[in-house]
Image 1 (cartoon, rainbow, N blue to C red):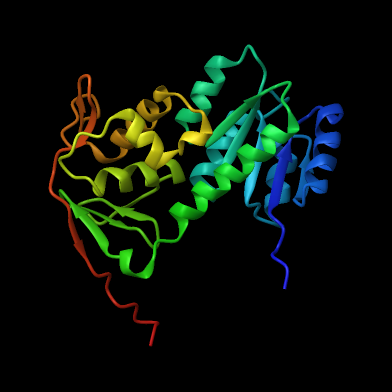
Image 2 (cartoon, rainbow, N blue to C red):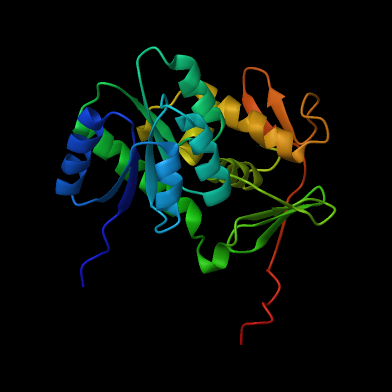
Length: 248
């Protein structure tokens, strides 16, 4: 049996870009759902959850950054931003809220396809831990279930976490009390093929700190090592997840 085609959601208000790009991506073997606005994209999401979304940043009404935040935090859908040359600040904000990558218009369609496949590879690596690696992480009262991708605080409250934050936290938890430089974290979290900058790591660390630190301005768990990178400054324990009562 042939594999199910990858489903892309393409959101751009310019039909002169959106329509030929959708046609090209379809010829590359992708299934493409087009939307001319964030509102139309949200409607499309009610019918089918895409494997990845391509979002223009500047659109009438709700902009691409707002939609990106929704897709990352509520839907856990990988996102590539389509940006103009003058939107450097928006690109940084997009990466900070969880976008996986971006391309600058005008772009070579073959480069976009390469980036799509790169992001999907990273997402698949982080989405399904092997059975022997599904043990819970416990650190400083917190708990992370890598199989369910569920982060729980010391009071037992589930804290939403994006795909990028999940990969970053796993990288730190797998190397407790070790200094992890930005190059190493980029390799583990984004993959060097993404061509992202060190600043993307700093932004993700900042977001993660706001979720797990008592005071993100004075971090105790994820410490900055000047000239070195970052270090998870606590011990980490692994234990088998509890047996689901619905199983067996």
